[in-house]
Image 1 (cartoon, helix red, strand yellow):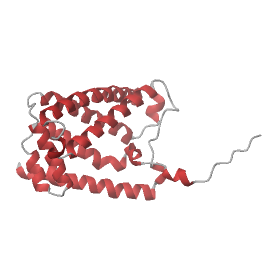
Image 2: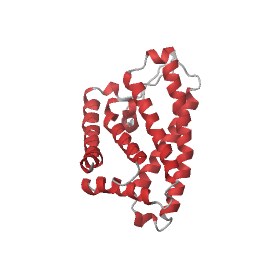
Image 3: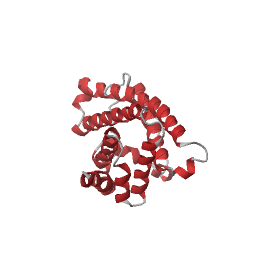
Image 4: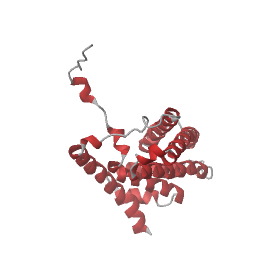
Length: 225
C-alpha cells in the first residue's frame, strides 16, 4: 500500500506535469489551429451564456482558492488567520463557488448531450472532459462534507504539505504527508492530477492561451463601400 501511495501521490504528479508541458508544447507547435475552445455558441445560444458564466466564475474562484490554500505555507497565513478558521473559510467559499460551477456545468453537459446540433459537432474529448470535470467537482463538494468531521484543519494542513513538497521536489515527503488523509481527498487529488495529464489533449488548453501578439499586430483595414 505504501508503494501504491508513493506511486500515485509521489511519482504520478511529476508524470502528469511532464505530459502537460511536453504535449502542450508539441500541440501548440504542430497543430496551432486546434488550440482553442471550439465554442458551439453559434450552433445554439439558448441559455449558453448563463451556463458558461456560472461555470467559469465558479471554476476560476475554486482554482484560485486551491492555489492559494495549498501553496501558502502555514507560517505565512498564521499571521492573519488560524488553520481551523482558514478551513472554515475554504469550506464556505469553496461550497458557494463550487455549487455555482456545478449548476453551470450540469447545464453545459445537458446541452452537449441533448442538443442534436451541438452533439453532432462534439468530439469524444469534449464529452469526456465535461464528465471528468463533473466527477472532480462532486468529489470536491464531498470533501466539504467530510471536513465537518475534522474542523481542526489537520487534513487541510496535510494536503498543503503534500502540494508544497511536490513543488520543492520532495516526492517521498509528499506521499507521506497525504498517506493518512481520508479516501475522498485522495480521490479528489488523483482525479485532479489526471485532469492535468489529459489537459493537452482536450479543449482545456484554451486556459493557458493569451493572444498577446494582438498587441503588436498591424491594424486591420476595413474599406467602406
